[in-house]
Image (cartoon, rainbow, N blue to C red; front, side, top):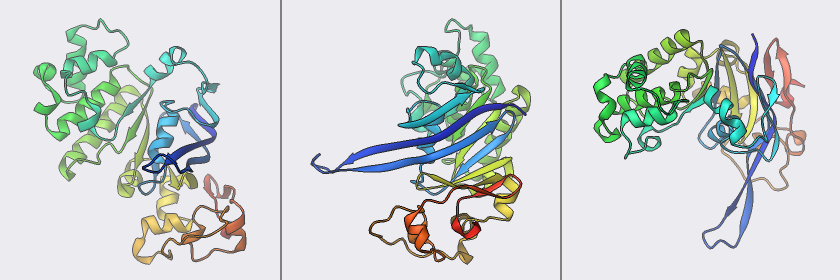
Length: 303
């Protein structure tokens, strides 16, 4: 399989100020992350809220520029290209945002939302209706507004907007996070049907472990801006290696302590919660090592 997206040593730091705007501190949202997305695969990026998943997804899409590191599209570096030169990339790599209630313009009709996402802005009504048909929305909905739609219908419109540019890859940020169980099943079935029809590559950003385990080929586990484990969906879900990954998949048997403040803490991001930590864990960041073929972990327990 050929590579469609690659991120190398991505780092992003945000400056956070207090409510008076006087004191400030640096928050590392993404820390030295590297990942490769193969064409035609489903890759899941999982972790708790605040782990940096969404920020990393926006960097993959270059909606946010990294402070350090590089983004490659089909082996060509695009990190520092201007927005004008990124038009081709942004037509081929699209996003489904986390919350369709917020991501859809409340003043735009369904037809206008899709038309503005299409490469040819003079697209005919027939083309818009064909896209609606693809996502299971009646063509009559072309003149409706988001507030006139159900949650599942809004998500289908968000998918239609992503599909409008005939992309190669779609990054889906919690695509079923606000849906009930029945609607979630229908949306996942739709995404799978579209994958087969258009030979799509998906990147799923989610905290839903069952979802990514069932639909993804590969999984990367994030904690506080770091990828701590990566491998096939089967190996990561059935044989997790990192203490944090084990805690995610089996919380009732996890050996994880309450998070504690640790002074002069420059090592592993998970050290202040890990019951297995050693002195080296507080002093040095572990590197990713391959334990089994294609299964990597960043933990000193395996070095």
